[in-house]
Image (cartoon, rainbow, N blue to C red; front, top):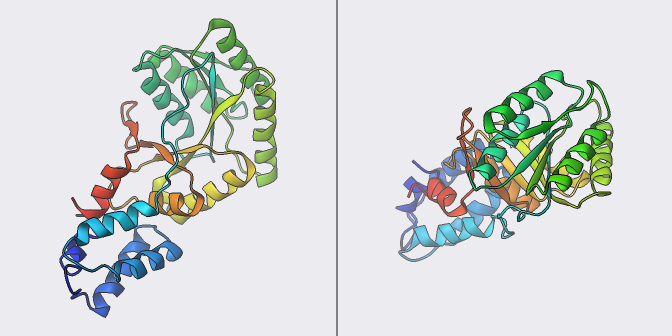
Amino acid sequence: MGLFSRFLSKLKGESTASALDWDELNAELLAADLGPLLTAKLIEEAKKIKGDDAGGSLREILKSHLSQKNRALAPAATPAVILVVGVNGVGKTTSVAKLAQHLKNQSQSLVLGAADTFRAAAVDQLVTWGARVGVDVITGKHEGEPASVAFDAVKRGSESGTDYVIIDTAGRLHTKSDLMAELGKIKRVIEKMAPVAEVLLVIDGTTGQNGLIQAKLFSEAVDVTGLIVTKLDGSARGGVALAIENQLDIPIKFIGTGEAIEDFALFESESYLDGLLGD
């Protein structure tokens, strides 16, 4: 059942929602990770709904808080470079593999760059995924220069006429400045050979407001063009998606819903709203 479904019947015509109803909705929205600012806005706007089409009115209110930016991935080039960023533990490397499989299913050619050189496990994981997907993975020395690996991957993609090059980056947070400086360097080195078409930030949808904080930090440091939200099934429990889009105007482009490589899909705002409304 969606967050708003049981309240819609009380919003038709002259609202019969009581103060207790609104308090309960407030608590549920906060529990669903919409955050206090957006929750207050939504309740204020919902209280103004008049007429019998409460569902349609509420849908338009919710839709107005989603980003209106293009959710499509940058078109294939030779190559289109995608930089994938995020903190450790959010499913970043797995998301790189899932995105690679998604693009390969569309008959796109790919090269992957394992630029998380300080975590041998991350490099090994990407190499394993690359073998399963059937794409080349460019690696470097353990604790080597991440920007060098990224450059080599883009070079391989350029020389082979590859459609996409996807770069997996480190996510360790010794300090914010160290991580962001490294990402900035990787991007500058890549752009000596090809423009960066997308910077996709991976966040864990179950981390709630912490996911929003991460999105703010990365968007301040690099030009994030879109989000991949893991562990988000598009239902009412994914309120953080609405919170992020409302506050940062960064479109969610993909969602990860499970561990399998097929558990990856385009984020569809209308289906997401259906989940919130219980349609």
